[in-house]
Length: 238
Length: 238
Image (cartoon, each protein chain N blue to C red):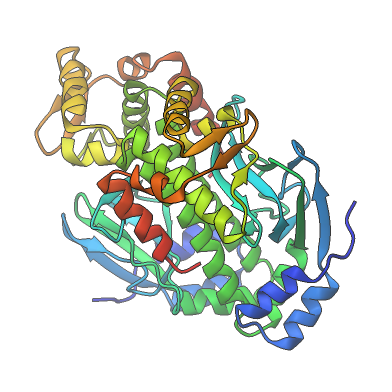
């Protein structure tokens, strides 16, 4: 199931300023997996420390022990994914489901620990990136409370398509049900908003994927609060 | 402003299984601060790596760059507080405000980094605890979406007083405004629910603090969904 990747993860880490020696070690320990549409990945089960989405789309799902599952994020290619998978405290409540064919390169927690101890600067960078990732997830959840239902749905769509357009894509393989869980809104409300956007020639609903026709019109739908937060999110360092 | 504490933090860390050598080093580097009611602490500004609330109550506040502030958590004595305060990526958006006189012992990020590198097992424990802390914050935010407004407010009150009762206290110095920001509900809705609880002889509103009269009656107000989540939260390892 796991074999060497194309070196996309080491190259990505080189771009954040890690030195050549570390990159060589990382490249030797990089694993590669592919997920078919609908397949689920539990980073803690695999003892993953750090992963990079090379291609595809993942939806981050948090499970409660009573069986309730909520989604918090969509991850696109070129985005990192962190896991809290330590041997004793493995966090099996966080999973990632592939919305389409997805390719991932990843490093085990053991090599992450080793580099944190041995390499100057790696620990600081790892902790900082991991911290930023969990703060980003938190900020998105806080926006559910700060913004109105409509504004939150609009900002989520604007972020999805802004990420897609940067990859020269204009469609996302997502169902209304999946979009609901990411925005925390009901199926009924979500359908109503999507239907309106389709009627206004902004989206096409292919029932299983959403296609963007007009990005500026989508952004124009953001209320003033959502627009402010959208600009702030876009301006943030990643 | 910062001086040696009473060794509560090192003792707390000893209880999680760290060895005597580490504890000695930690004890030498423990700082101590007190906050008056209303004072705010920014862990990143102080370059804090890990802190323990020895006495008092803190409210965790997340700021957005447009000035919006949301609260996510209440922290009581004997609870850890983690910061993402790295030199380059200091996170000034997270602050803690004291709801009453509060005493804290803490360790700088520099000594945390040093111990992560030098001491066997410290890195794993630190990452695990930090991860659990941010997952707990996330779970509480997700409950805002999963539960109804009323259930979320009730579960928040039940958790506050359950923590208080474990400390042999039955009151919390919190205003309705502060409670609103922790639960994500409006001032109007929050007041309505608190007034009902007071009329039922469950709470007394001292306008600045809430006093618990009847814990079992408060728990009986939890709906079936909130009760299930409440039991799950209580059963979780800390």
